[in-house]
Image (cartoon, rainbow, N blue to C red):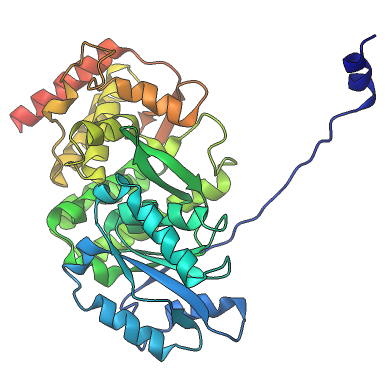
Amino acid sequence: MTIQQKTALTLQPINQRVRVTFNYDVHFTKGLFELDNPLLAQVIATEGETTPKQVLAVVDGGFLQYQDRLLEKLSVYAQCYGDAIALVGKPMVVLGGEAVKNDSRFIEQIHQQINASGLCRHSYVLAIGGGAVLDMVGYAAATAHRGIRLLRVPTTVLGQNDSGVGVKNGINAFGKKNFLGTFMPPYAVLNDFDFLTSLDDRDWRSGIAEAVKVALIKDADFFDFIMTNAKNLANRDMDIMERLIYRCSQLHLEHIAGSGDPFEMGSSRPLDFGHWAAHKLEHLTNYSLRHGEAVAIGIALDTTYSYLTGQLLQSEWQRVITTLSKLGFTLYISALTEQLDRLDHPHCLFRGLTEFREHLGGKLTITLLQGIGQGIEVHQVDLSLYRDAILMLQDWELSH
């Protein structure tokens, strides 16, 4: 008997299970930085410590174009609530939109500021902006000191109902969406509905796609609400939008907390319905597509494919496509068909399936529909039917 065999007999593996509970609140408010709104200060003061907490603010530069007094209001607010908040230095202003996730220098700049300011794990990084900025800042906060408390203030529909309320952070690398990132829940999320009034129509509409997504795979009644109010949403009805954001956020959080796999250790990603194509389309268009616009196309494509495979009724397919169109989404772009027959070409849409599998690992798992409000997972697809689905979307756009 060899030494290795004897060791194997005498030293048994030590099995350890570590359970960690994360708690965070998603708040809904208006006038977050008005002096008569104590919410932000109350959230920071919940630890019960008597000394003010250090806070580094990072702000979306694109958002400042529409909220030019934001930095001043933030400074005045911090002074008013100085017993809870101690801003460190001037707020950092970064690029808005997907460009901020394509340049790792922003991560380095935040790390440098965290280091220079002496922030610790009990300090806060306050991220104010759209989903892309929140993703980038969240990654920086999660990787400094192995995690500094992150406060998210989403300023877009997409941020308030989807990306800003979840547990993911990340940036793009190697031509792939969110190649670098972490799973790190925020300390809290503060949704200010007033910020949505400054959005242009594209950004207002874009975030609705994520609500359509979660409704289609989880809640038929919610989809009926969106379908019934599609015109009102397109016309910027704020009351309807507030209800949409709240229910969408609720469904996302229920999935994260109740799926049994909040950090995606398995092969399932139901909340990424429509996203395998969306992520690829964003890259193929050099991110000229908003994320939500790409998701709408991805939803239309996977819904059409579900219909062609016999899992979805034609009437259900029409309801989905019509609703997306009424919301104002374009459902076909030329990037869908470029290099489509060259599976090894980096610009082939179907490369998105491989990249989607690689991002998670394990076998390919994508979510399709077997009814409105009923998602189903599949592990292989018929590319010829996907080609037919793309042609159907092209015909739809031409006829409408």
